[in-house]
Length: 186
Image 1 (cartoon, rainbow, N blue to C red):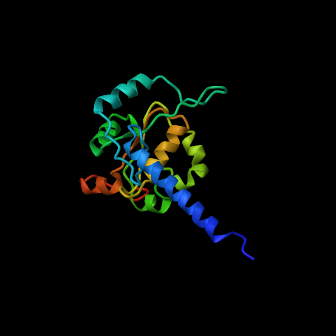
Image 2 (image 1 turned 60 degrees about the horizontal axis):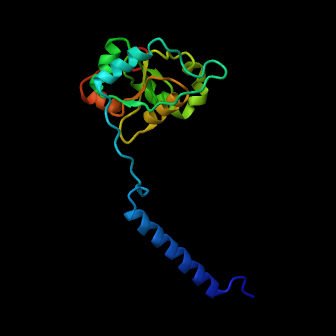
């Protein structure tokens, strides 16, 4: 006893194939077609002036979502370069956040960075709650292809922090450019 006739399966396959073909065909020629891609476009680097303007404009604001009934405002994190990280740290306008696991952080870290591992974000909520909303929170990890810094930045922005940035080049680029890294406790 056959549960499904072979003829029905062929007809269903032809209908599904034709629908997929026509859908992709129309999407290809439609002016607002859906882009089919498995790679994300690169993020543009933040303009130096934007970092300063945004910092001063928001300097008096508190972290959104801290009082009941206040809507959480999600903003896209900015992408910053090594030079911008150094400039913001020199002005004491930023907190560097290492999104790597604690073992890697304790082995080597960018001086004055703190560790909030992305994969343990919920366990570090007490640390997140102490972060200043009037400073840039710059998240990083090892560098490409590591994306934990970017994921952590999006998590912090979704939690209502208004000034979040991604240092995508990470600790590997930091070292390559001759900047220091230190083991925990030094």
